[in-house]
Every structure is written in structure tokens, then in C-alpha cells.
Image 1 (cartoon, rainbow, N blue to C red):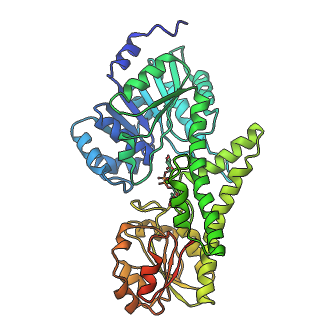
Image 2: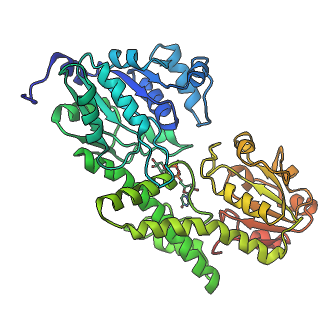
Image 3: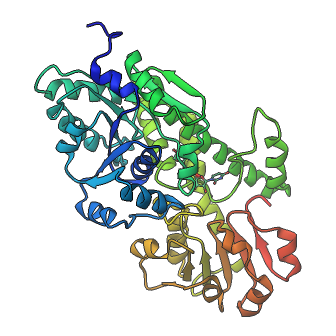
Length: 448
Ligand code: UDX
């Protein structure tokens, strides 16, 4: 087969006349579908959750992501974006298919690739013309070759197709900005024709493009997230030493971060990382490395420092309040980070459970995640508040677990008057210790 020769369909693809199918309307899938449609492509977004598709058709989004609703509504209205649960028909109608289904963690830490396999089989059975199949879900290295094998096994004839890897680096809360202004676009391909299609697909986005083989591209994603998590655990470990030695981790991070080789991002000490990406990706990276024959002890330690961080915070509160039984504690911030209502693997879950197990009574408040949290955090010792002032009334301690901008604007003089005991445990180092202490508060930070 002469792979340098392009068929009519491939030529059409390179001329940007794509029909894109995005399989999976989760955070990355929906953002990608919406942003591709915003770039002018015709996009079919498929999800097997019929309820989700019904509400998307009615222009209701399944999660909160700043700016996403207006892009979705605009592109539904101009006919560039459609939602459906019919995967076979969508495959037949599309030229480029992005697989963006979930790869949740299994109990042993490995990624559950069942949904990827299912989608690959449906694609195979409906392969009616050349298609470029792109894995965008975060997957362990060597998944691309498994997807290729699966499609070859189940396709009915010899219709050509290519596999590519194009990992996503979107941050929740900043996903739209990240899609249009990425630091880099990573493309893992086997053949030049797939590279050409993907490059033209992203041609209106200004960013360096890293072209690699598929295994390397898959590895870039796991290595990037693991490295970012390493920076976080590193600074959290340094924060412990700062606490012991009477130093200030914020200044240590500043002094380190100004060195361009280190960089200042991801050096905020606090309660550690959460969210749906880092915890599961680290587990999966540890698992796949071991399977390949390498024990990734460094990443195991990163994970263990992250797990300890929440216990460390609760221990610090206990040092001040002594017995936590029947103490009233206000929790400000529940989502794993600001600007999202995502509670998946949020540090707040462990901290709330640790405090409840100690017998404390908790009043919780998050600007966006109260509803999501109510489904996870259920206990007779837990109540939810409508706002921060309602949460802190009569409490013995305020725990700030997520650095929402709204909390910076709180009137702490007013808060001190309505609290029972003025203790502020700042799990995100978002307040200035001296300014808070001047108001008469006791202040607990992480390494400050
Ligand atoms: C992350 C990656 O950034 C993104 O590239 C990837 O594709 C998906 O996972 P996201 O999960 O949205 O994105 O969160 P991110 O903004 O990266 O933060 C991750 C976690 O690290 C949060 O819990 C955050 O609070 C924590 N964090 C971040 C710190 O504790 N300290 C820091 O300095 C930075």
C-alpha cells in the first residue's frame, strides 16, 4: 500500500471539509466538541447517556465550565453542533472520530479501557470510508495499538483507517481558554496522512505542534500530569520542613520559581491535588510502568505525600482545638479547585470525613459545588450553608479548602464577631497570615 498517495476522501479532509465525531460528552469531550464547532467544523457529539443528550439538545449543560454554555448554544443554533446517542450512524457520517470516553480507575489502579474497546468495535463495524480515529481520552501507553488491533479484528472489509493520539491538556475551569491557547499540541501518528489531517484540523490555533509516534504521545500525557503532581508534592513536603523550621513556604516557592528552569507554576503548597485527572493518571502511570517492568517509586511517593497532606491538615487543627468532638467547624470550599463544581477526588471529601470521624459538627459551603457535594457528603453531623457567613456563625474554626475568589472578599472583622472561637485553618495559603492575626484570629497555614 502506497501511504503517500492520498484518496479523494483524504484530500477532502486535508482541505478542512471535515465532519468530526466526538464520542463522549464528558468534560474534555464536550469542550472539544464545542470548540471544534466554534472553529467552523461540523461536529456530532455522541454519548450513550440518553438523559445527558436530551438535556444537551435542550441546551442544558451537565457540568459547570465558564464560557462553555454560550459556545454550545451558539453552535447548536448555527447548525455546527449536534448531539445524539446513535454512535453507528455518527461513525458512518464522520471523517475524523475523537474517542473521548472515560477511562476510570479500577481497584488495582489500572485504567478501565472497556469503553474505549466498545467504541473501537462500533467504529470497526461501521467503517464505511477512510476515517481518522483519534484517541483523546487519557490512556496508558500502547493503547493505540490495541485500538488498531480491535478495529482490524472487527471491521467487515478492508476499508482503510488511521489511528492517532492527540492528548488533551485542558484544565477544568479554564478549558475553553486552554483549547484555543494551548502551550503545545501533541500529535502521535503512524503515517504522514494522519499528521496532515490533524495539523490542518488545528491550523487556526497558534501553538507549537509536537509530532511523535503513538506510544510517545500517550506517554507525554501521563508524564506531564505526573510531573505536575510531583511539583505539588515536592512543595508540600517542603512546607512540612518550613513548619518544623519556622520558614515560609510561599517565599521558598517564590525564590525557587523565579529560576526559569524550575518555573513558578504548580508550587502552591496546600491540601494537595485532587480532581478526576491527577489521582487516576498517577495510579495508571504507576500501574503501566510496573507492567512494563519499571517500579516508578518516585511517583508512588508523590501519591503518598498527597494522601498524607489531608491528615496533616486535620492534625494541625487538632493541635489548636484539642478535642474535636462536638466542636463546630465551618468548611469553606468543597470542589477540588476553584471555578468548577467538580467534587471528584476533592481533598474536601477526606478532610470532611476525618473531621466527622473525630465527632465534629460541620457546616459546609461552596460557591458552586454545594449540590454535587450533597450527593457525596451525607452524615447527620453535616449541614450545608447558603453562604459563607451562614456557614461560619458560632463555629470554633473555619477551614478553607478551596481558594475561591469569593472568599478573598469576605469581611473577616464581621466574621470574627459571629464566630465562637476565631481560628482560621487556611488549607490553601490564600490569606496573609499577619493581616488575619492583626484582626485577632489564630491562623493555621501549610508551611507558613
Ligand atoms: C489537570 C491538568 O492541569 C491538565 O493539563 C490535565 O489534562 C487534566 O488534569 P485539572 O484537573 O483541571 O487539570 O486541574 P489543575 O488546575 O491542573 O489542578 C490540579 C490539582 O492540583 C488541583 O486540585 C489543584 O488544587 C492542585 N494544585 C495545583 C495544587 O495543589 N498546587 C498547585 O500549585 C497547583
